[in-house]
Image 1 (cartoon, one colour):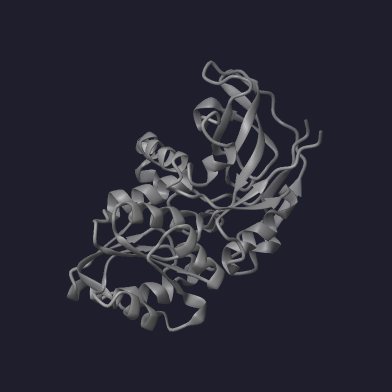
Image 2 (tube, rainbow, N blue to C red):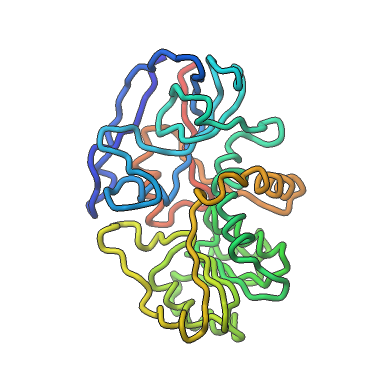
Length: 335
């Protein structure tokens, strides 16, 4: 087997990210004791990837120029030198943007594909679902009757977070771009209302839909929308900062909230997090999420791009909103 890889050629530093990828065909190293060889079938494309291709300080080391691009993936073990994993097991982990790889068994985790299709362990039953679960339920703590707002609510993390708040009995308002995505939030996910930020006047829409102000805001975008929510939070309201897609294009010129003094005047709590804080509790999240998916309460919408060669195009989708749902690549393998 001669796998294909997508490698980072340089740090973008504000230049078009599409220009900084190169494909290669490098053979696999020989597996050693404790290794597994994995055929990679699905690759996750996530906004957090932007923080991995910069030399700015982040929550994990950057991908170095020349290295295979880091990515979550799922795949099948096709050769094993491990006592923990067997040929035929399906696993997930940082498998990279490539068609196959050799990994230490401690670096991957077996997934129960007997319970759900493998790609779901990259979306609602995987890291995006876990992020939504801990961010919303552990930090946000939505209560029945509260008003909760979720930005990027039709995206992978946002949609799961919004549904979890809905199930907690909160009144949930989702913010998304375009009428179609807003209809999906109300008609398919059962949110109470949706705000189309592309229609403009987000502040006016919010004041109409939440006249008694917002108890909890789950932020995925930062920027102007965060500023708007800061001006509409109730006293002692909570803001959970999951991401800031509006600031990801250039990490060197990020802007903080202009209305940050509302944190003082309204005694607000604003807390950021990453999954690094919660990896030891993944089984807890998976149990809740898989039960919710199995009984139909939690919906996981997928946006699938075909072929490893389309990774640069898929990555661009993160910034222009073309994807609807969890963005991932289905890897084609020669028969």
